[in-house]
Image (cartoon, rainbow, N blue to C red; front, top):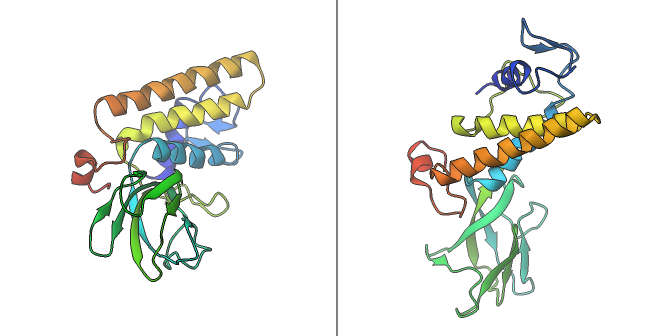
Length: 220
């Protein structure tokens, strides 16, 4: 989906009553996109946090002196190429292909995930690698250089509705009037309802397991 298509949805729909300087004949925001672009990035990230839409992996190399491993490219134990886009660790696999149990104190050498992006290894073994699969964030839209007519947003079509509601909730909240507050709450409730519906119908697995419907369509 082009970014321009998402913006058009907002201009003609959820944000049509706001004084954003929009030209309804062209679907343009005459005063530019500064008023909504940060909200668009936040909305897409919010959906990726809640739903297991995109997965990626990174290899880390253990060191006996390090027991806490944070998924951050600044650390030398993280393989090159990591984009710092992890939202939540989903699984850990050894070099032999064995998936390790997480947060289980009954196994030998337990591994814990006390925060979404940290592994605590009880007894790390220097030089031994682990492949960490994580729930990945979307590629962020650069709000300084983007072109709405060519910028692609790589999301499945069925998450468009909650994304629109999330953006609308945040933008309406920026207007201090009672009407703005009420509209913000209204769209927040619509967002939560839309997310609950996605989970209810099994379109996306929020638990972190592989989702067959998404896998078939190339999303995870």
